[in-house]
Image (cartoon, rainbow, N blue to C red):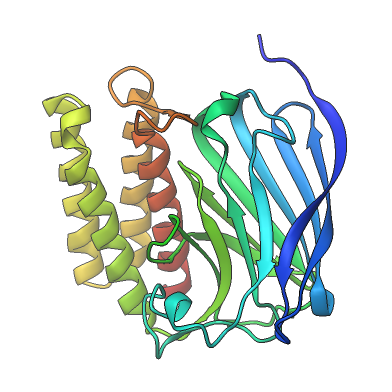
Length: 277
């Protein structure tokens, strides 16, 4: 049985401000009810956010095991810019140059099943209809990809899902909606192919056939039905997870959370299909 946690810790994380003077900034971090961690992040220059990570089912969650840190980044840093999907059409934000890293320590024994939901809320940005602001994630040193599932006002809120831990940024995504949809469709198909050996042939065939239907509907711009078929794809994953599809992530990083990753990729693709419809 899961142990319920309710603890509060003020930790210091390093923040690098634009004027090249490094100073620590306090983060109020709460592990709430055993399956949610909430961080109040206040960095140099008034860059602030509330950041929440919610789990379906988690073991070993505490303020030490989660490995959460944040920093103010230089928006002209070429190393960071080269990790964006498009240097021209995905832009770092001078009003919110915050990079959040969640990198659990391998020695702490953290593990979870299925999806992790990530919520970010900041008053440094404003939500407006048609906003290009999106939540992106990347592996350490890897390419950032849009994981947005929902977004809203107050002043700007975004939610995404993932099957593993990452670095997070909010970017202005100026790519064409069709480009975003096609990119997410390609990412989902590639990941399914890469995970094919970790499920039965029957399950892989069913999922691949469903994705082919989604692709065909996108090609004829029937985005509503494509979204419906994508939901059917998720239902197949959900029915097989833990039985025929691995659905556990561990801080030892020795197994793939296949179900979590596939469902997260489907979630963000459905979000983009709704926007383009």
